[in-house]
Image 1 (spheres, helix red, strand yellow):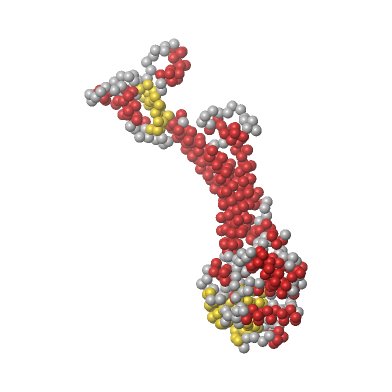
Image 2: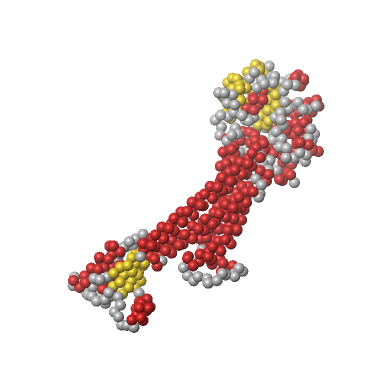
Length: 223
Length: 314
């Protein structure tokens, strides 16, 4: 779960930067699934970056999984990041590491044993339908395959908070449907999920409470 | 396999290649070893000059077996002039050793003149050698007290030159220390530059594993371990390469520094013990210490550099 109170964020610093979010307040409980909607430039990616601790809010209070972010020490933030999964638009895969190693990365950083890691990676890659591409390098994969690898890496350690930026835009309808079913299953198991999308069809097909932004302002919460 | 090589995505073999850094650190270690050797040699010379022949004060006591003046005046048991002088010297602070020359030593010392005059029955004074602590000048205060006991006592104080040579050796030591400091500073700068280049090479991977929850200490520890081992390796090569040069210099400097027998010829190249005997123990220890010192310096420098760099990440 997370709470935002009067959060603003500006690229390039709070004084001279370009405002991306203005006075946003949100309270999302554990196990909730939320769509994050809004046109390009509305601030969706900025909000997801704040929730995934990729950037710090310029002002306001951010509390993620019960941890006040501004007061947390660096080691505490690192521990918190291990409980947050993020799927980015550019996938964020390391091009010189195999698919297996990319997906195994979060588990290796948790110092899990290799046999357990191999089991988990094979299971999740089977689920995303890429168990035959484990030794491939990301540049050898299609956009849709890279997106599935990125999703596999984000969910392999069953994060308490999952944020995804346009996770279905490179997937076909069948894969998108499988992904949405998995997200809802994770939410049932207690993961809080926020998914940013422009895909009205999928929002209509999988209705859920929404957060809507426009020019950096929150214009709809719940819905 | 790639899985082993890129275990956590940092790919440090790419970021910090295994040849460049050891070569540079090895060169620095080589220079540091030479500078340290210079410092140790200067220290040895300083010790020799301040404690050697140059630091000796000579006391001549004419008619040594005559009664001492002061004791005779006070009505005490008459003591000889030499006994009174030795007792006064023994009670004087700052004197680290005394040696009264025996008749045989005295005659050997005077042999060229005695043989020329052909008179071996000349009355000879007693001669005492005093060794003083470095920087101590006891002559001014001691001479009046000795003359009160035994009029006609003479003192020759020769520590002026030994003190000057000791000051010169001290300057050489300071120069060697400064050279080591400069070499270490350059080594630290080299390690910092190499580490920053490595960080830039792998910035995408570092950003990713940071986002996945890797702590600063994990990332800096991985870099520091790699750099520390490369620096240790480079330092070991620097020490090994410095060894033959130090042996050659020690052989050349032996006449100036040797306290005992000086080897007349160059030892056979296969005689390891003979060559090892040329090196002072401090120099051998220094060669052993340089590699771990290089490794530790590399490790600490990298820790600080990486942690400072990571501060730019949220």
